[in-house]
Image (cartoon, rainbow, N blue to C red; front, side, top):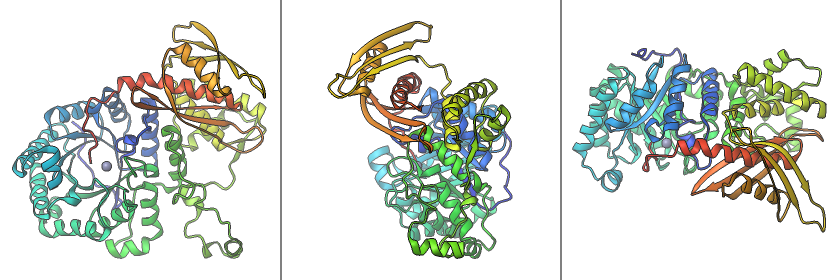
Length: 530
Ligand SMILES: [Zn+2]
């Protein structure tokens, strides 16, 4: 039996779905250890509810929801389920043993979904939803219900099903704008309408929640309008990642409520508060970006590289005289450190560990040892080791789930007039060493065909990106690639001061990741969900 839901001291709850809705972004597959690390970072930044996955969708999802539920002590860990007993049992099983857990059940209610997707009438949907909520209650007292595509559902039916859901025991009612169609004014009014029509929302302390998609670029605006209408929980993701155009971005919501507390205080009749420690925003944003392989656009609000950069001379002049002339937020409040030159070759293990912890990572002793050894090598090559380098070293450790292949050696011959040739030496999980050589159109192509021959795994290279993760002549090069293998996209990341080695490591990371992907093969075809 898990703890009953408690009322937090703050008035807006942040429900993060980076690991569920966010991970549904094409190409954003995360491994179990990566998900656990993100969940820890979300909990320590103060997220109230973490939607950790959709347990019925795959064994991998089930396992990671379980690991997260067992480990987290502060945040509520949530698992998603459709309105079927099998889904709910699987979610309940994944959450068993967790301290604070929630089951989130959803069922489509809009006319278009009823007729074309579910092919079910209103009565049946109502009955299914009620039965499912009651079933979920047998696992945890904390049950959230979402009428999927709520924003396109007839208001009368929405009233009816929300009333029934509350009667059945749902403690949170989420009204998703599943397809990103809503307009702020009407989306906000939908919440106000339900509160006016259904006094039981207030009487029973039911929390209304928003869940917005960004197809029209309105996800954050809609979420804030929902708060004006009476929502007290906002569902969102780090960096706004998610299916299609993504979800409402956590960092934008938190900083809008904070920066415009004056406005929202008049709406809420008290200052808006979330549990989020905003100084964790940048580190967590970076972690999610590197682990998912989804880069943040430069001009993205709050977390983009340019979000706090001032180019124009007039702005710079104003800034120098008085910051607030052009800056509505202090970069330090979102965790953007001005000086992040931290470590060098003389830095010790303790300083290294401190830095990793402050960047939001929780790594084990053996992982720390391995990262520290690499740090020493790096510090020898580079005089200055930046936060970005340390993050990259920590990220690398999260892949320590036993990989199939390890790179032992790489030799590349290239040059004008020469045919690029690569000789690659790999070690497999049994300790066997294999070697092969191949030619290619370029050095990277030669490396990849040698690896493909050695591993016997045929893939198509869909994307190849390279960037420097930190500054200086000896900056570490990060290569991110996307491979396609039988219709699935797998990403891989490699890091080295040698870009050809980084390219080889990225390829191997993707191939190694294939194994975890195969075990998490989606068993549910229609999983797009709320
Ligand atoms: Zn969604």
